[in-house]
Length: 293
Image (cartoon, rainbow, N blue to C red; front, side, top):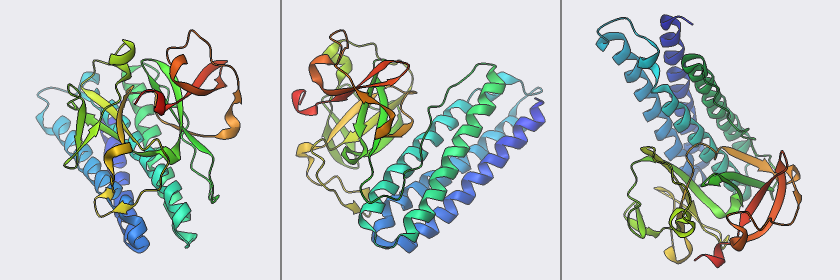
């Protein structure tokens, strides 16, 4: 693929992100109190679009010689950030479908969640062509309109596959160089206790500059959507869990697996509440957060 076409594609993806952010902001305003989480997503999508525009401009006008593949290596970070936006859009959609009586709003939001997901896939496919290395994106299923969805979030910690009910997950953060050296993580002016499996179980940690944090409310108590997005509310049962960087992007349905005994050789055997035989015979564990807090 010629570099001119690569630049053109990135500009098109930036335009898509910008368009999604505007329409998403309009729908968030129409949803009123229920749409404040989506308003935050709209802002993040708009910021991403602006960064993509700046990224192409830098390659165009600041590269001293003809651009080569190494100049496009940063596209993978945009792909990852877009995937996390799509995951958060799906999580917000599930929450909204539970509280909004206007069924047209979750339906329209599902369109934008899918748009973000498709944009992430397109960016990853472009990265694969640039780097000549396959980058596998787990499927992100757009949540159904059921009032009691059975969706689950697939992620990994230390290379170990794990599942969690989306009802327990407040949001996903993909942040650069998050300060995980202490026992708490500062988020929007509040300190959340960190559940760090890497330290507890001596698991291999990702040395990347980019880190993924899952904000979880293990008790499953209902939470509110405030002006800053998700209202953290009572911090006594909200935790920040560092998870692996790349293997997090799937929201799946409960029919995807079947119950099997948890293998004793699994790193999280002592912290599991049940296990699925999920992909290729691999065991996927539900974490029993009460045992580790």
